[in-house]
Length: 217
Ligand SMILES: N[C@@H](CCC(=O)N[C@@H](CS)C(=O)NCC(=O)O)C(=O)O
Image 1: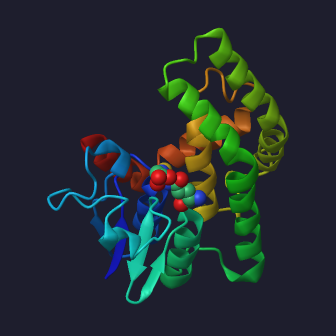
Image 2 (image 1 turned 45 degrees about the vertical axis):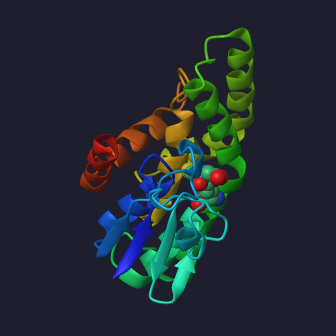
């Protein structure tokens, strides 16, 4: 059976949510961040991102990772596309056209949106969002997000989902990236269709199951 590695306090949320939505059987193996341990290489240390056993699966030492037989993958988007191809069904892109559209949204999320999303998240998590410097960082990130968010807003004005008129992994990958942006006050002000779609995504039973598991960690 396919194994998904990682604490849900990481981008493992998106691969677990995707597996849930795709109806793909999987087992989850907890991997914690090496940075959270006093000595990640200690013999009694829990499986962590610096453990040799984990590095054998993902030599980048990052979460999430996946093993399916001899296939080992890092990179959350690659894992989601692999699982979608394997599972098929309505949540997977259907055919080369839909797959390319889903990839288009996934690359937009990963390359253009995610750096700004991480900037917002780290500023908020670091507790500096209210400082002048933090506010400036968030404002700069939001400014850089105007073009992609307008693009998504315009697309969602014409339909409920990103690809194929139905919920797919494209929605998962985009929502999980924008979830970090949502930490900024008023992040989606001026983007009503995007806001409604974001809420629709989070109302999915698969998201709710994943979120409950994350909160239980
Ligand atoms: N592009 C990678 C990013 C992976 C990544 O940065 N993961 C974070 C957790 S969300 C991590 O493992 N950070 C610890 C580290 O980089 O050492 C993906 O989407 O899977």
